[in-house]
Length: 354
Image (cartoon, rainbow, N blue to C red):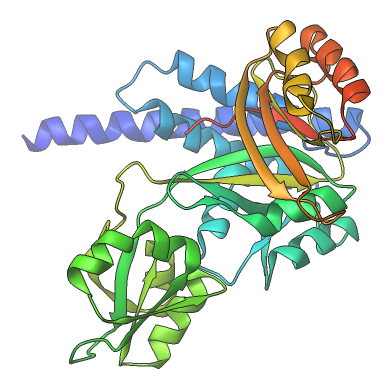
């Protein structure tokens, strides 16, 4: 047995040496590409194409998701050889927004928390960060209104999206005794765990705060309180996990948008987000949707928000399959511009892969 173990370990050492050489060769090519572009430029569409190809060509036994995560980190490190990307997210540390940032950009990116979604937008607009990551909707809790409202006002573009599986934990200060008197969490997370709380913590006050990480921080300071947050927040604030995966629906996914000063070129599997409003006349909303149907453009989302322009007026946020440069979608958008009272293309970007 010892001889077999030694043989396997020797093989692993030899493979590791070869992998190290190949990774550095890849890094040399990445540097050369950066020099040809007069500096490293983040290309969301190219990275999406690489990760899709890795998942499709993966022979196993590693899962496709694991293989893609490994290559995400390799690409992140190669990109950082020239200049690490600066990325801001809704903080503090330990939020799901931070986890989404790392998932999309890798650990080599310089990530930094902001106190609000508004600040994320301002930092990127001012050029103090290259990109921002903001939550836009949850499969259980619905849309994040602040993000949608800011997308109408900003000159920034949506250049990517991240789908993050969200598992919620009930956390408490280590060594705390007695029943918790209150539970802190973000309003979205309280909604995601509504039935679990009814069954297990009925009568305990629920307090909505700015983020799950802030909830964890408060629970770390108050032995009479608990928090609902993610595993990263538990580790960051040294909290004890009293219950795991307490979300009401097991397939709980939060979608994040990546915002920057540009959108992405076509990757071959894209999505386009837009905002529009209808003219005040009968059948106007039907007219808005007709160009999409006539040009066989698939709509994956339709969300309405009150407009600040007038009472009982609404803006529709729409996601469609395809890139704005695709022939069918380009024609549909051209016709839509003639029919809409307001139209803003928020950005085209690669479709996220879990």
